[in-house]
Amino acid sequence: MHLRTKTWWFTLLFTALLLGICCVPQQTNTGTDIPSETDNKTAAEIAYSQGFEYYKQAKYKEAAQYFNKAIGLYPPYYAAYIALAKTYRAQRDIVAAESTYSQALRIDPSDVRAYIGLGALYVEIQRYSDAVSIYEDGLAEDSTDVEILNGLAFIHRKTEDHERSLEYYKKSITYEPENINTMFSLATLFIEIGMPDSAVVYLEDLKQRKPNNVEVHEKLAETLFDMGRFPEALAEYEWLLQNKPTNSTHHLRLALTHQRMKQYALAEKAFMDAAALVPESALPLFMLADLYITWKKYTTAENTIRQALILEPANSYGYVQLGDIYKQRGVNAMNAWNKNKSKDNCATLNTAISHLETAVSYYTKTKNDETYGEYAGNESTRCMVRLEALNEDMWFYCK
Image (cartoon, rainbow, N blue to C red; front, side, top):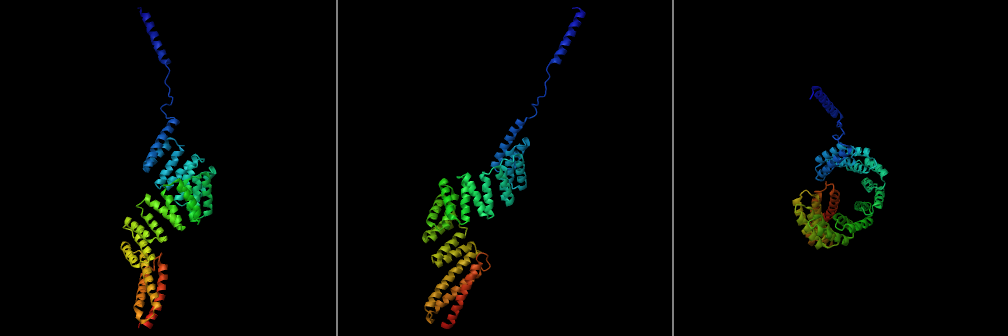
């Protein structure tokens, strides 16, 4: 080939290659290496789910880390703020919880979950006026929210504004007539304001709805007992013991119910069952001793009290009981003396004096006790008045 022709071909080839390179479409950065908002939200939801799993396991430190991660990935993530605030509450970090709830309110003031959580937080730390304020703000967003209404009812109940409390509970039950928590709270309020009949209506309704709910049966049993409806209370305590046979408190309440019904032998057995379940506790023995005193089995009562005092030697109630026993023995002997005041009956007079002096000595042991001191002081004074009269008889008849 001719040299000029070769040169021409090389030039043409080079130009074509150059044009080909220049004309190849250039790759542009479409942003695929930068996460989109959708990607961030998905990642935030994954972090939220991981945090929730840790929260359910009470691993609050790890839960908080993942909830914070979710918020970092997607700052408007309202549910993550609520979960994080709950986690801080569980950790008793009040400041952080309050701050996080406030952030949630700024993100979406129309969602009542933050009002509910922040209100409950203020109730926990007894900032009742702040709780009322935040709950009322929540009601402005949703006037039918039962949790907020119940929260306000609870606060007014705690501050003894029973009328307002009842008003809010009744509103709540209007919106959710079958809400178990509201029904139970309303029954409790009725008991506190002296309307036990109304309480029983709600508790009986609850028992029908939740027949295996122990707390409902306990509240109903206590209410019926306090109303003097002992056979009905007895049935409730028997049900409770069928479901929780090792509950010593239920045995004690059953025993008291039998005692009020004057079924002393059944009461004795129930007290003994309770004592066997908690052998380290003196309470069942003191209560059993009360039964024996009512039953007028004074010697058995005294022995039982001494057993209880071995367990709790500083328990003032035991000494009050012993004082009552010896006071009654002294009164019985004094009555026998008064029926036959004669030199031949001086032994009875001596017995009366001895028992009453012993009673005074036991009462004196509890004279400074906040609970029993006033009663013991009054009984001791009565005993001393009797002793004064008996000592005069002793000088006149038996010297």
